Length: 400
Image (tube, rainbow, N blue to C red; front, side, top):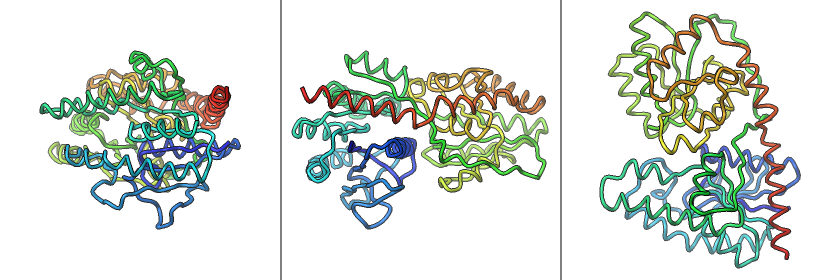
């Protein structure tokens, strides 16, 4: 069965969404499906070839040769957004041509609506079932940054368009229950959940470090305001004043990287290290430096409805995960069984948790249970079978 994945971005771009896409198509290929990727006009490829193969998966590029339109976390101006939105017409034409070449049985569009609308229109034209996958309420980010009439209007418009796409799709996939509930509240009835998981085939055993050192802590992932890393920086200022020499390592970059760096300098932190971006090939190096992963996400509608990938990856690497008790984390972690939870934004609770780990050591029973949980219940191969069953049902319904 050939499945055409229409995505906003994919590899070689590194983000939570592109890594999830990598694992979706990789696991689908392993169980005998034939996934193909088409990326948006806002991403170039790994090479000059088009199409190209990445991890033995065929990738078509529709890049519009405009460097100003490349995917970025930085907020764009209204003019640039309108200009990018107009690219949907050429994107439609290019995807249409690829559908005629590949003749897929399923169109699987991944948020945003830019991909969803094209998939729906072409699905109707070619009589192909359409799956629309939603990974976050990304319009909520717009609300937080709204400071003018136009910027306040944008998230309302985005919400309306996203809801329209969801209602028109044959099936909407959410990544967790909280997100699915939000989608259902919009009047969308055709939903299923395919939760985040770990590509266990990519987990490489870590080498035991011969060097004895104090327990080290860290964070691996995108450095954005919602991650709450400023709380950790302020905690480390307190711990350093108390004479503790335990290090905290930040691997990743993003819109909050420079503000976090400035805060660390302002607090004159000695054991708080920002390493910048880390390539997938270097992930073992990062995990070898860290004994305990802290994910201190702040409380918001986004963090209550989005489940991140990195905590699961940390569990698979046999790392203790400490996380704030936002909805997205509570879907992954059972307190004192597969990890430790603290009240979001509460520096005192986080300090108590960190100090207890330093004093008493890492609870090995939690680490062992978390790894077992990931390997047995959070494998992408199980998710691939879910997708396959949904696809088969949609094709059967479409044939009547």
